[in-house]
Image 1: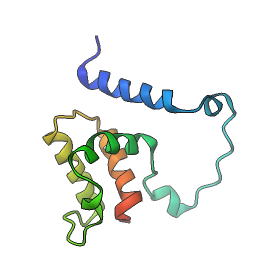
Image 2 (image 1 turned 45 degrees about the vertical axis):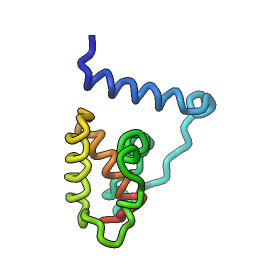
Image 3 (image 1 turned 90 degrees about the vertical axis):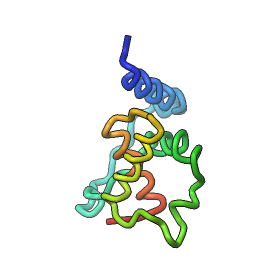
Length: 114
């Protein structure tokens, strides 16, 4: 039997895979354009980060905390620390890459830290 942490991550990965259209799985992947140096240093937006944020973060609060004028998070590192605090407080037991994916998604959609 998988530990709870592995089972939850596996279940999320399976759910994400099941949500992909069949054409996306069967069709050959298009060639990726060459990344610019600036783009390669930015955290990529991930479907996994969005799925985790939609599943967990928005259940506690809406997106208004990300856009309010007096928001508490003021840096990329601070954003990752806040995601980690919320993950711990909710007992989610995410992997380190899950925390980074959520922080990356939130940053690319709301915060835009460098």
